[in-house]
Image (cartoon, rainbow over all chains, first blue to last red):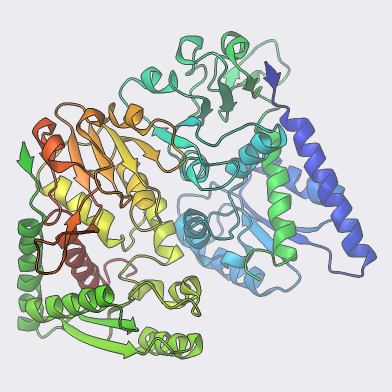
Length: 293
Length: 293
C-alpha cells in the first residue's frame, strides 16, 4: 500500500510555480496577482483565505485581500467584482464561499469574468471543462488529477466510482475521469444519496473517490483488494485529547481500508493540501493567459 | 414491453406549444421567432434545417433561414451571429453543425449569446446545466427526459448506464440522470470506447441509454430482464429494398432485445422525433425569457 502524500505533492507543485515566477521576474514579466474577497468572520473561511494569501507570498505572487463585514450588500460586492474584472493588475480572483444568505452566491459567481475565475466555478468554465476545452478546473478535482498523475496511477479503462455529486467536487470529478485524457478514460459511476446499495457499486471499483462528508462511510467490506482510494471528506469530529478539541475525519475508515488498497490518501494530508496549490496553478495560468488566450 | 413512441410524444409536445403560441397571439404578445443558419449543401443538414423551419410554421412560430455557401468566411459567419444576437425579433437561433473545416465551430458556438443559444451548446448553458441552474438543455438529452417523464418511468435510485460520451448526448445525459430531480436521481455509469467489458456494465443496468452510432452494439445478452432501453443511435445502413437505398439502424439489436425490456425506443420513431420538439420548446422558453429572465 502506498500513501498518496498530498502535502509532499503540494510542496512540489508550489516549488515548480515559485521557480516559474522567478523566471518571469528575471525576464521582466508581470508577477501573477491573486485577489481574494472575504465576507464576514467565519473562522474556517478566514483561515482558508489567509492560507491562500500566505501561499502567494511564499511563491512570489502578488496578492490582495479585500474584506467586508457580513452586512455588505450584494450591490457593493458586485461593484467590487466589476472593479476586479477590470483591474489589469489582478490576473485572477476568488470570492470565498459561503456567502451570507442575503447575497445570491450564483449571481456573484456569474458576475466574475470567466477569464479571472481561478476557482473554476463560473458556468462558462464548467461548460468548457465538460466540452473538453481549455478551462480553469475547480481546485479539488484538479488536485486529485495531480495526485493520480504524479503517482503514475493508471486510469484508462479502470472502473472509477465517485461518491457524492456536489458541484465543486463529485460532479466535476465524475466528468473529468470519463474524459478522453490522462488521468481519465475511466468508466465512471457516480453515486449519491439516492443510490441504492452503495457497497454494491464501490466493491466493483478500481478507483474510489469519496466526497460526501460522512465520517467512516466507506468501510473495508466496501473496497476491492488493490483498489485506489481517494478520500475528499474532511469532517470535524470532537476529540477531547486535542488542543483544538476536534480532529479531521475522512469519509473512509482509513485503518481498516488502507491495508486492502494499492494507493490511498490520508486525512488530513491527502487531497486537502492540493487545493491551494491548484488555485496557485490556475492563477499562474491566468497570468500567462493560457486558458482564454 | 411498451414501445416508447417518440413520434406521438413529439406531436403532443408540438400541440402544447402551438396552443401556447395561440394564447400569446390572443393576448397580443410577441410570437416566438427561431432563426437557423445553414452553411453549405450537405443533404442531411439541409433536411434537418428544413424540418426545423417547417415545425416553426406548423406551431405558429416565426422563422428565418439564413444560408451560406460553404466558402463563407469565419468572419462573415461571426458577423451574422453578432447581428442575430442583437436582433430583438429573434428569440433564439441555431447554427447547424457540422461546419466546414476552415471554420472553428467552438468559436462560432461561443460567439452565440447564451440567452439565444436554443441548441444548448454554449459552455455557459452546459455549465448552468451541470450546476443545476436554469439552462437550455441540448435537444436529444432533453427529449429523452421527456420520454421518461411522459411514460412515467421511475428513475430515482435506478442504475442507469449511458454508452457514449459525446458532448451533445452521452456526456450531458449522464450528468442529467444523476441530478437531484425527476427524471434523474439515478446512479449513473458512463461507458465509452475505453470501457473494458461493456456487457458487464450494461447487464447491471435498470436503464440503458446508448448513443454511439454502432448498429447492433447492444445485444440481448447485454440487457437485464425488465430494463428500460433508450436507443439514440441512427446509422444509415445500405438496404437495396428501400427506395432511398438505405435504412436507419439503432445501436440496439431491437428484435432480440425488445422482448426483454419493460420499455424500449424504436429506431426510427424513438428519440429522433423529440429533438425538433425540444428545439421548439427551448425557443418558446427563450421568447418567454424563462431561462435568463
